[in-house]
Length: 239
Image 1 (cartoon, rainbow, N blue to C red):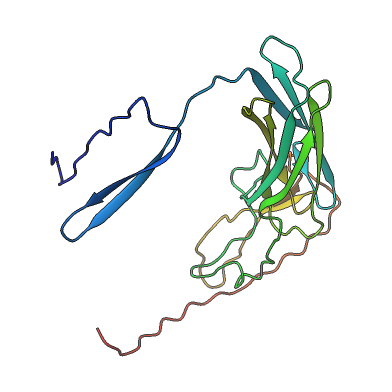
Image 2 (cartoon, helix red, strand yellow):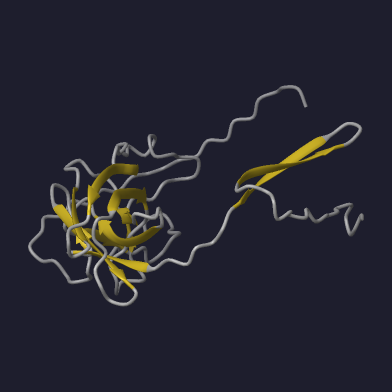
């Protein structure tokens, strides 16, 4: 029946003789219609687990990251004669070295600016970047390697998954994530005064740090000061 704000609900009884698969529920009114679907299946408790790890937590342009998946039955024996599907998913994510909460790392866009207007390069290292199929060895293990592109303009969070499927069709996935950095160090700036008066001296402390937070010395740094202006334009029009 109707409730609250005109919403309502109903139960769909599932008969014991229904076959497994996808079902659709449709609702039709005088001047509207809606539908939703659900999957009917059976839950099978996995008999094995998959542990996936990477040899590094931080990667850099041109480097190679190795991953290892180990499939084991819960009673301890390795799972052999099973297939594994490797996949790597990369997504842009802001990164800041630990230990410097007052400093800003990365490119800051102004109001109304997008990546192209800010001069950023587009990356092809985005989304599902690779998928491979293999078979685990007699010890239930499989290795995978991923090469980081040399033209990487932004920090990425990369997740590598190893999906193992046994002879019965049961699939269990193990995953591991790491950072892909555009360089081996980051430049951080700290704004002491966001608003200044004419003739005032602007003090901008900066530092260079590694992705793990260690201070980096001996690097050449170039600083530039830009003046940004916003112009408001009002045009006559409808409305």
